[in-house]
Length: 369
Image (tube, rainbow, N blue to C red; front, top):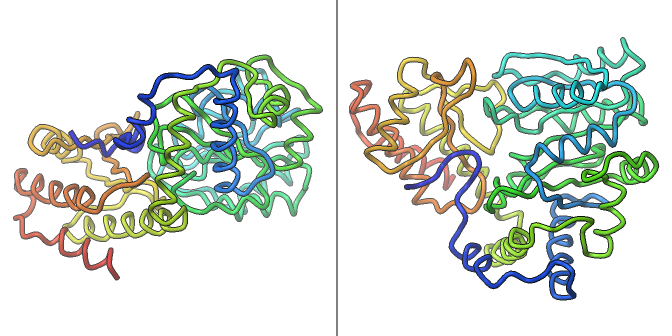
């Protein structure tokens, strides 16, 4: 079964074999050396002053950032299930929250955020997804962060990049906390989150000293010395070191960014060429989301049962209206071609159009142009 869901992504054999080695204890010089390699790889990727690795899903990192960096009132952006989650975290800790809500295909505008900040001086943190994976859209996070800092440099910008980190270069110049997850572009098992921190975020985390398990001050103190406050996800960190090694062998992160972009754009154009509709108004590179109220569920069923291909459906009101195709990670071109071919064959099975190989031809033309 080919796994093309936008997380978890498949774990390559080279990484699986590395993680299958005997487990080493997390309080040893051997693991500290491994941790240092993983930490250096992440710092080079995200280009921020500090980075933390937590034994949690991405939601744990989201919770840690809300608690550490919002003291008065949160402004959260809801264009899907994961933007909605920031508001729920604030509610759980009785943190006042204002929410900008859009349809799931619509990114937030810079103007809407600045208007909200001008209307409420209590807001001291803004939370937004880089890629909102519920519908596959890309928010203009870099422009948002820059505008927020121009309005008030003391407002903290928290960006959920769980489905964007490792997919595309992200300008972190004006971002205070950048959140990632192991099970996305890193092609690792679920269970580890990542937080890149600005210097301002480092100072605030140390000053506020909030929480116990998700205390970022405690983690900073330990991880600067290549260890962790609590038991580390040792196997995943070992796999992360192998991931960076594999990336270097393929030409480095810039090569991966370029291939991911080519794959995403070629898939998008190929599926439009056979009559399918891209759902978000500003599509992310991490995934292609197709909107088809009539056939989405049937297409996914045919792909799984006949072509051993597992795509993701939607959530809530979009559960049966969309399907989502992953582009994150080191995906061979022949697998990406299998996806567009199989979708075209599924449309033939449903009597929507005859198979003529158009998706395959358009994909290759655009990928190599």
